[in-house]
Length: 328
View 1 (cartoon, one colour):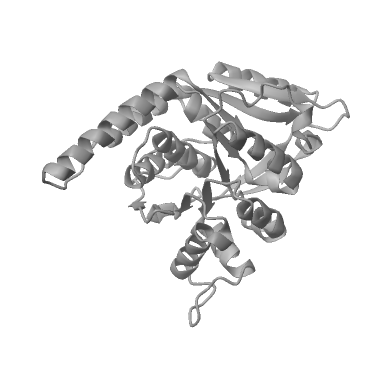
View 2 (tube, one colour):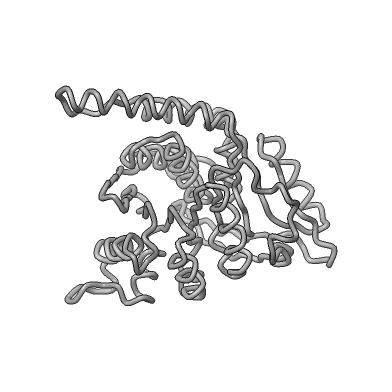
């Protein structure tokens, strides 16, 4: 989740990180690192003695990872009433980590508060175990129309397909392509809350995104040497959201997301060095400047209008806070 805030902060957007830490060295270090990266740390401090949340990350020789998470003091943030009154002011986007589903009332309150102020709400599904354990909480938020964009990796999409029995007749529930398509169709349907955009990252195969209006986007993964996949999902999500907030079409959002994820897998751990952020900013600018290949007066006018919208939105992003909610 910190990777999402890092990209937003390093990209020039004003960003808040909302959560709770323990009264310990880890919490203090976390707060300082966020501030150093241009992120406003709106972090409450637990007085119960509970430690700050942490995760043990295990990385195999081929760069793949698995994680075991201890949510620690973060679980003590249970109501938006614990936060200062202005936590959501100026917010254009609230992004919720999937672990908020272990506290569905908190998630509901914060999402509703963001929605009341005209902000978009996005969520990532965090892990296949969370999808399995928190199915009802997720469905409740979706069906109440509180989510605009939803992110899942392939494993999470397959699990969602399985636990909700979404596979079409005659297909296997372990068929990745069929499960991803079925999960996205559900999320875009009235039964799934009709989110605006459903995004699935596919690891080395890139990603696919579908919008409720029929728009689609996809991108192959960038060919890079994989060192460590920790943080790749967060960086992908951050890149996608950054482009989306600038008015980019889904195709470009997917490409920016994959570019961000590619930088993450080339670094050890979940933080990027300054040179990597410089490369990423350059790649994002290049992708977002790409023109459509269609021709004709109508297409030219549409392209010009899209470019103007992207430029106007980019200026607004630079001047307007983006609240990133971290419920972990």
